[in-house]
Length: 427
Image (cartoon, rainbow, N blue to C red):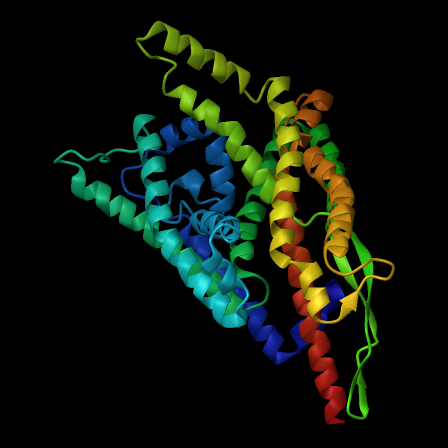
């Protein structure tokens, strides 16, 4: 990896791309420290300690949510919009047709994602600002006559911050190296590591060595699972056109052990935190039976209990299968192979091929799903071992960091390989 970076730095074009990427990330980190007017830092800290959902949103905002800066929502509304459109494609024929129209269709879907991001960002900004206002961390927010204009200004600022973060990510896609949106999230996760290391040094030095070892082992496991694949051999039939023979070559279909990435963790966390967030609004209700139910639900979905982590583990496995199946069905590999004259040796084309691929995918997905489940409950496991669930990087964050590094290095190596071939051809 270091050799690839060193070789890339020697090439003027790649060096410019690397420098441009770093400048954009610095701009984002600077913007992430500009707070929204009227925020109380001490009240914000108390709310974050009591609400885990805000911690998840803070990760996707690149650490800007913990300061409630103008970039507080980061790219999370855009991620939500992309997931919604991806799940709607099998249900809406027009969207499914667009996904099959190549680059023009992808550009159109990207426009829909950007348009959907704006109302989602405004809605999320309203919910976050309302939560902070109720907790006493945000003043001058509400829809009374005195606070209407400041409230609208706050929502407009938060929505504009999200669109600005997306624009920075697109600039990286066009003129930098790596996936821009992923790198925006990556920068926020990495920026939190020095603070957590410092806290462990001051409060739990043996725990620091344990977590460093655990992080290293987890990274190795993530790389092994993320890069793991089952290669299905494919043979293409020979076709004679005039005096020429086409086809006849052999290739393979790489089925990933973990095709869903970190999406199941996002789904599972959202489902697990929703009951606790909703019940918190009714704990102090004047209706006795409603308050009792709210306290029971809040206790049941408390992250300190075993039930929470067992259900979290099962939900991660379930969502892994759910999301993998949706994505795989959209690819329609069996029909694509049949149209191109390809077949799996020993398997009849058509439905038999589809059943075979689905069976193989479900078997190898079990390994990826269990691994994701174990990664998800690592804070609970570490708390049982040394009494602390505070990790250097959260489980979801670690998946993102490793995935972004692998993807960026692959793009960098592809750029180096392309330039090597160009030089070879010119000779």
